[in-house]
Image (tube, rainbow over the protein chains, first blue to last red):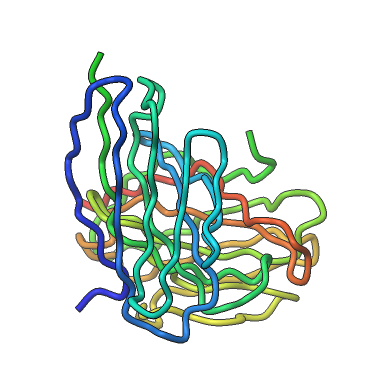
Length: 113
Length: 113
C-alpha cells in the first residue's frame, strides 16, 4: 500500500465549477500536511499547508481529518490557470525546514473553457 | 522564481555509466533534499543533507550518494545507471528551524539509454 494515495484523475472540469480532491495517508505518525501544485515539466510549488481546523486561501480550502487519515482540497470557481497536477504531501517532521516529504502520485486537473 | 538552481537541465547517459547532478541552494538556506520523480509519479525522497552530512535517507540503494559543500550547495551522484533511473531529479533547499517552506529547483531530467 502506498503511503499517500490519491486518485490520479484526470479530472476535466468546466471553468467556474467547484472541484474536490481527496487523499489518504497510511502513517499515523505524520506530522504536517500540504498540497503542492506542479505545472507540466516544472517543479512542485507549495499551494497551502493543511490543518485540522481547516484553512482557506481565496478560492482554495484544505482540510485534514487525523482520525480518518484523510486530506482534502476544494477549489471553488475554477479558473483556466488552475489546470495543473495537485500533489498531496505528508511530512514526518513537525517543523518547516526539515522536510522529508512523502508525495502522492498527484491528481491531474484540466479546466475546460 | 526560487533561488534554487540545478544543473544540468537535461542529460542523457548510457546504462552502467555514472552521473553527477548539482544543486545550488537558496541564499540563507542550510539544508538540501533530493527527490526522484518518475514519469506519472510523485517525487520520492532520496536523501537530505544538513551541515555537510546525510540527515535522513529514503528507500534508495547505496549507488545513490551525495555531498553537501560548505556553501550549502549539493551534488547527487548515481553510479551504475539503470534504465529505471530515468526521471526528473529535484532538489529542495530549506532552513532547518525556520518557519518557512522548502523551495524546489527546476530539476534535472535524466534519460538513461
